Length: 244
Picture: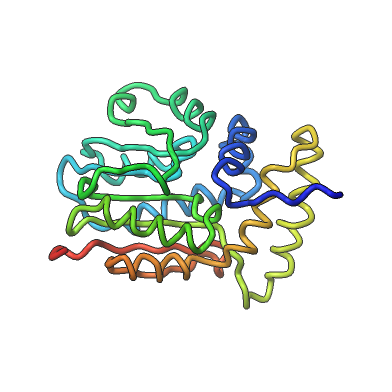
């Protein structure tokens, strides 16, 4: 009997996947995306609304912290950034990167965001960059409720994810790169690994941030949907109503 395919959305599978690729994550994701991940993270931070002095920010599925420099540049007087990620090695890589005044402004929580008991009504800002694709629609609904609970009334959020640009005339080339060329490059240069190339499967299943936008709206948040570079990435941003 053949081995059953893995459940791409099993938290244990996701944690193991990112544990394996954590050491190469920063460099390889930048190379594989031709630098677009840097640009899209910066655009995601720009979608956040104004924040009060000494604001509290929460970075969900934080990875190795690539969004923190953008956050601290946009909001230089942030009180703290709480970074949450399910991957132990991603957590270790992020801790190893801390230096100077940044170290005492970032708190790390290694946990599953879907099941972790999170502080309610404490965050002025919630952000996530490139973690949504590892959640199926049911998990996205749970995540949306977690975000709504985290935010203070009037607090803002922004989430961005690589997407499948359906309807774009160059989509066949985009899919050829993700599904064919990227796995070949990864096997050639990363000792036969097939971890980063799973973005092809994840983006095809994910589609875009539309489902997450609906879940956030159903959780009581004001939501806006955005497309980036013909839909190769999409994002959602908005706020928790001040009267909530």
